[in-house]
Amino acid sequence: MLGTGLIKGMAETARNFVGSFLEEDRLTTVEYPEERIPAKEAARSFPFLVFDGDDAEKGLRCVACQICEKECPPQCIFILKDTAKKPDFVGKMQFQPKVFDIDVSVCMSCQICVEVCPFEAIKMDVDFELSRFDRFEGLLIHKDELSKPNSYFRKIHPTDAAAVDANLAAEKAKAEAKAVADAAAKAKAASAAAAGLAAPAKPAAAAPPPPPTPADPILKSASSSTAGPGLAETGSGKTHAPAHGS
Amino acid sequence: MSSSNLQLEAPLDPAFKVERRTATGRGDLLEVSMGPQHPSTHGVFRMDVVLDGERVTKLKPVFGYLHRNHEKIAENTTYLGSMPYTDRLDYFCSLTNNWAYALTVEKLAGLQPPERAEYIRVITAEFTRLQNHVCLIGFLLQDMGASGTPLMYAFREREAILDLFESLTGARMMCNYMRFGGCRVDLPSGWLDQASKVVDRFPRFLDEFDRLISGNEILAARTQGVGVLPRELAVSASVTGPVLRASGVNYDIRKVDKYGIYDRFSFRVPLGDHGDVYDRYMVRVLEMHESLAILKSALRDIPPGPIMDPKAKLRSFKPKAGEAYGRIESAKGELGFYVISDGSANPYRYRVRPPSLINLTVLEDMCVGHTVADAVIILGSIDIVLGEVDR
Image (cartoon, rainbow over all chains, first blue to last red; front, side, top):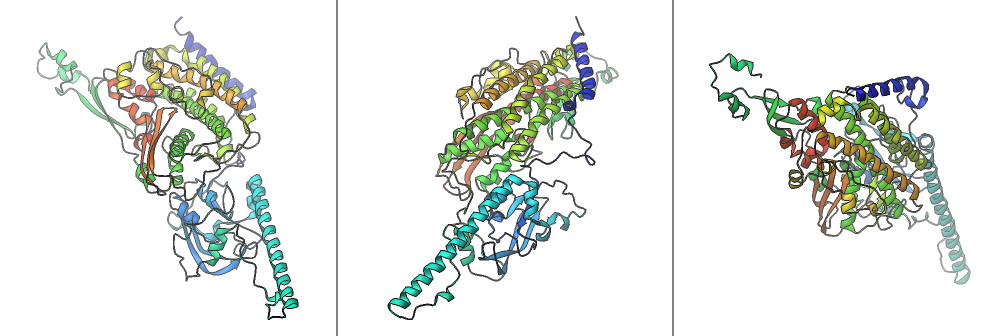
């Protein structure tokens, strides 16, 4: 009979209408600003820089290697190297960014900066309310605003942060063990030399700081590159191999 | 412009009526520029239609309003760098775009994704197909004037799939998930159960949708016999995907090429008989049933293991000189990438074969003789996404 299909369709809409009062899972939307669906753990919106401890300047993991700047597909990252160095989490002297800007209007949240960063220094935020009042300067997010503590990272991406923390702790332990072993070897060599030949051996106490670990080619090249004033030469990351991660 | 204007003019000769039908441009034809802001053109697409009364006598598709220089940008960035740009081609199906590009570069560089990555790719691609077809039939019915209801029901189901994508890849639409030689991250814990739940619930929606609209008399009247695409024309215009299969040509790249691990799944290829809008609609509905069958067996059989080829590397990736063409059956048809490498970090040449654009070339043949309202649903039934047409 003509019209049966129509009536059946109407019955279906009626069923949905009534069902939305009875079944919770038929309601898929929430009243947004008041009510929010919690962000998924893997969610990503915009990058931020991780720092350890309380001081954003001192604890910043970024060493201004400029790999993310180079790999960023829409080229929205701008980094200026500082001339001064500061110790990183294993105590090695590293460069730091003087300027680290990301243009929020250009960034496409692709996460490639996070993937290529060998220092676990840049991660993705889950905050999606990124609108600004100023459409020129305001859309350029600066270093102080980008820096967020590691505790925040642990809060938004617990699984990822646990893996990163374990990774860094292992690296630190390795570096410390190596430093201890180096110092012991030096002391042993010095004492052996002193006992054997009584030659003017280098005193063990004045042993230089341990050399960078060979497992970290980037740390090595970054720390050994010349401390040029202001801008570092571009393309220095060309021969870098990823230090950790797959 | 209706013919009433003409009757005010000088006396008609008896032969005029016939001549008017043959569209020789006697002044009573009206040229309408439909789009690029017209909501029914699915984006910024323009149709220059020449109307005789309400009938379309000529139709010229005009596109390029969304041209973003994708191919040239890809030639000036690294291989990895254009992966997130492929998301933005067909923005409904970012995961299949990723797959097509990854497949091509893997061919070029000789990488082989591990078993688990292949399964993840099939699962995500079939989910992508589901949500694309769901959206499409929603939009198609919206174009026909079924305001809101079918589209909202469709979007409700799509939401469940987008949630899965978000918990896996971090983004709902711009997934940027596949990498050369595997996938970016492994499935989070509990994802497979969640996915199985969505797959189990989905037939309920399909049945509901069938009851809601498939038997509807108005739908049948509007779509049956409208926009017929003959078999021969479809083949000679190299139309692919559901549009081709609705015309009765058995051509599905999942069956023909068996890329990835599609040879392990048993599924049927739905074919249409008449090649009209109704067949294109029904082919997609039936394809969703087949996708569910693939998903069920893939979710059951997925093995544990690594998700990346150990030879693959993220940075300073330089495949050896050569060329490769990779193609997959995306939700809209044959999506192909053609990449030439000269051994450097950037592709020497990069070309996309977008199914939407090539399916669009037969639009005029399908529309001539039908009304403007029919032209709208014929366009809707081709399933174009302007991100892919214009690139």
